[in-house]
Length: 188
Image 1 (cartoon, rainbow, N blue to C red):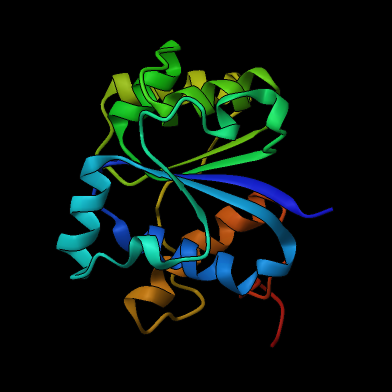
Image 2 (image 1 turned 180 degrees about the vertical axis):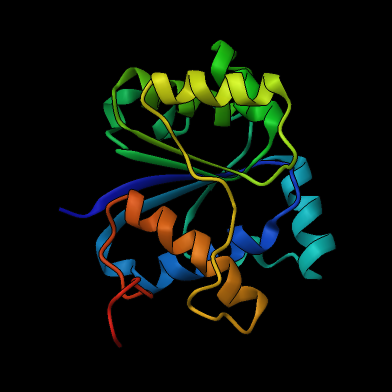
């Protein structure tokens, strides 16, 4: 069965992770039925500033305004089984932790958690305060997954995209996608 996935882009720096995630999802198009995308205003601004373009809406996904509570994934009945927030700002993480559903991203995350589905948060901020760590603990206890945007180097990435892919591929693994990627201890 093909996946239905929500991808939200928060306002923290790290647009390269979102771009590589979008690129990988296009490569994996045979594995998904729907990808719903919601972006904060800061996510759009950061994409343009960090990547030098506004190509985020050129991907073959379904785009929703950040206040569109009629989006299908604003309800559990739509059966989106996974939500990825990449990058995830500490503000979004904090609102999810406290149950504040004041936009589509936080409402969708609330739905995913209440339906006991897979929520994957990719925070890029560093360092973490005690408040951040406690919020991550609470999300984990509620069933969410914190997958920090901490790239690995054992695959010897040579570009920013390859470096970002070390995080994104891990996220896609956690989301249950079948993908070809560097695996420790395996030869290519």
